Image 1 (cartoon, rainbow, N blue to C red):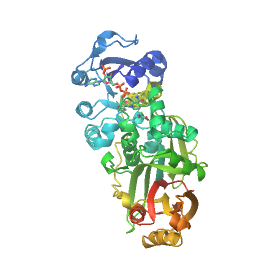
Image 2 (cartoon, rainbow, N blue to C red; image 1 turned 30 degrees about the vertical axis):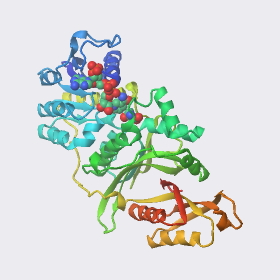
Image 3 (cartoon, rainbow, N blue to C red; image 1 turned 180 degrees about the vertical axis):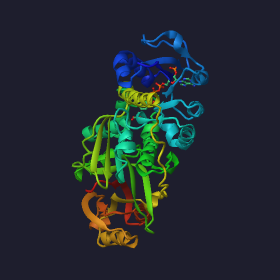
Image 4 (cartoon, rainbow, N blue to C red; image 1 turned 135 degrees about the vertical axis):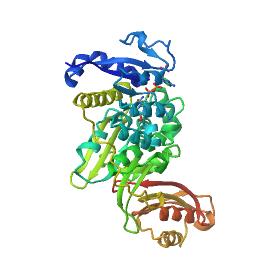
Length: 445
Ligand code: NDP
Ligand code: HSE
């Protein structure tokens, strides 16, 4: 055995406390796997005197001086489990510039300004690992970063936010509305007191940016990701999806292919969409995560597991700690970020998708033809149309009675801009009393 490798842990909350516990419980195995024991040099926290529930660690290791801890000469590896942009960015750049290996779970920072971290790592030749930042315990970034390096990834479709998957699964199972399902998620501890980052899709968008960067060898930030959350999804949408043999999931989609001019480009987006119940992602329930990867030679691959929680996330953090520790002992590092492709990022309007549109229309002659004409004008091809009677308000003839019908139209694939323009024109028609719902459809219905 060589000298111990010394860790600076930044943060000791949900994830950090589990990392401390596992470092203690698995000390002998980790040492054997690495070839040297791991020691905690210090743990930076915000509240030094906080009760840590009997964590198996000397209370003297806690400090509020994170930067001082990082700069210590006896620290080899910095493990960041605090979150947010600053001061985490300053700390990690400092650590990388000093040649220390960095492990981080911080998806927000990687998605906002991963380039700064990667540049600092490349300059000093330090390792930067971040498996825990996307989909918690699921080994996903290492397969994208290493195992699939000989292949061309064409599309990544994922359920990467556990809170929203719990809410949508509950709406699907019970017919509950969004607010009721969110209340249940909060009571059970899945949703945070402020659920905005989850339900508005910001958390999934950050993860989408990280996945797209790795899959397509291109720097993608959260600002490049088109984002819609699930707050507008209604019980009626869920019922419509069921009627079509579908369920609704918050999907992160990253795809590559030629744009309208034939230039190879990528599209990265997050939105709720209907997927067929036969799709592998449809059966991902509760707060689980899953990511479906399509590659030119490998074909279809599916990664599934727990995407959050102290223990699952700590598993991913420790896997990275073992990897960077082995590298340090061997005097090597994993190749730095691969962003050579630098593919252009398509605006959402050019993403190709399908729409499910539910319209409340007047039930009289010529209405369907007028509606179909709008789709034709925008070069959107209709795949299916279903009509159901909606309401009646008295009168001698159907027209005089003001009878309504619900038209449910599903399109073939078309650019999102054409689909959105179709909806806008429909909204302006006299014969359209209201547009009850518009949802994208993915996964080949
Ligand atoms: P918590 O809020 O539970 O813990 C944050 C920790 O950081 C606390 O120990 C806190 O100290 C410490 N801290 C906060 N600000 C400072 C500061 N200025 N200086 C020093 N320490 C500070 O967060 P989580 O453990 O849930 O998340 C940590 C990271 O892991 C985040 O990047 C998150 O996105 C990521 N992640 C979390 C997952 C999860 O399931 N929780 C899943 C995947 C990734 P104190 O204890 O004194 O308050
Ligand atoms: N809030 C996130 C989720 C935690 O619900 O999946 C993991 O990033």
